[in-house]
Amino acid sequence: QERSSEIYKTTLGGIGSEKEIYTTLWKTVEEKVGKMKHWKQAPLHTLNAEVIDGDADNYRRAMIKISKIFDRDKIEAPLKVANEVREEMTTFCKEYTPLLELMCTKGLTARHWQTMSEKTGIKMQYNADATLAQCLEYGLHKHIEKIEETCVNASKEYSLEKAFDAMEEEW
Image 1 (cartoon, rainbow, N blue to C red):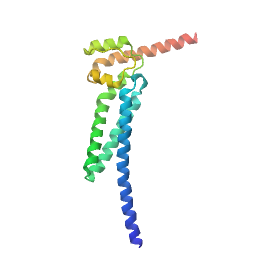
Image 2: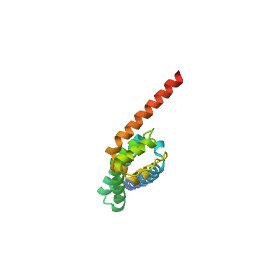
Image 3: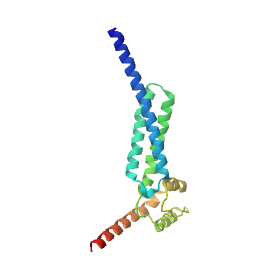
Image 4: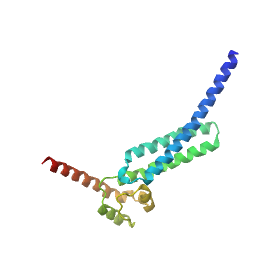
């Protein structure tokens, strides 16, 4: 009877860890889908690019771990899902987070958008509540080098304006 008890513990333990990996996959994918929707639809000025980059990279790393387990156990369907999510997050980290880091800059004005439009050759309309989805539609992720200086300058100008405002208040 003691031997049977050990076999049951071993079997149930295996089932528990197997269930856990499926649960982790499901919860990670579900969370990622919600966050991606928010990241693409929220106004850029409300987003924190550093936090997004960290979250996206965490999803990517989680899918690497999960896919290794499904690959080892030769479980094809969840392996395919994990690999697709990993690739999606790899692309997001490489192509879209650099764009977010530039475009989430406080202080981007119509003038900066006009400059970016001129530098990229893309006709863009200024929108104070522009989203990542709109930037991707314009194809700005393909023009990081061309818009970087403008975005960095916008950030510096914004910082100077805030510093002047603070000085003015002190006087």
